Length: 183
Image (cartoon, rainbow, N blue to C red; front, side, top):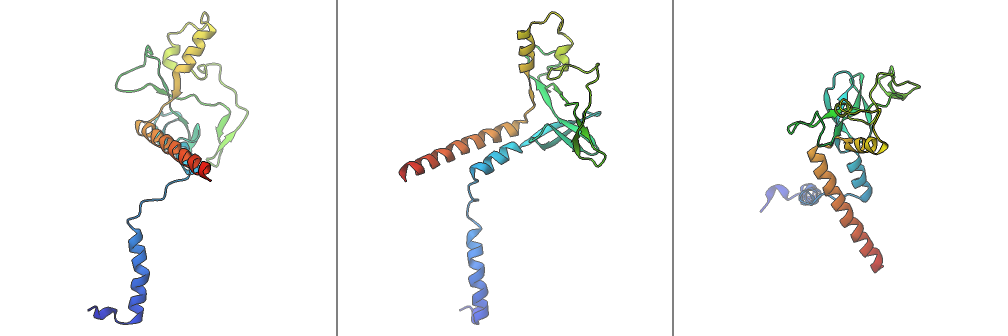
């Protein structure tokens, strides 16, 4: 019937190949809880390159990256509905750099004793909203309210994946609890 497969060597090769082919249709293994946490931590984020404000997508597991010889800071956005820079089509994106983070000569990130220039904006604040605020007469509650408007910008796909991972983690944790209660 299969003349080419009459010798033992051909049958041996076929017996080794069949399990591999059978495994091709299997679903991928369920990630561990740690794997889900790791993936969520490194989901893509928008960073702005210092000096050019070029947008680059990098893993969002840190506030700054060395990108092509310059610092790239995670993009922040203002959620203030009355922000003067708010545009329905484009979010207000800016950075909130840490002056202690420096770019070393070898292109890696380092930490140094740097001082914030006196002309810099207030850390953690939207530069667009700062233009309208009267900082001298502002109450502590108002200052806190403006700080709460500022958040890291989240890509729409990142938000969706984060929700999927949270649901998968919750289901996995519940399954583990049930298994532990049966034992």
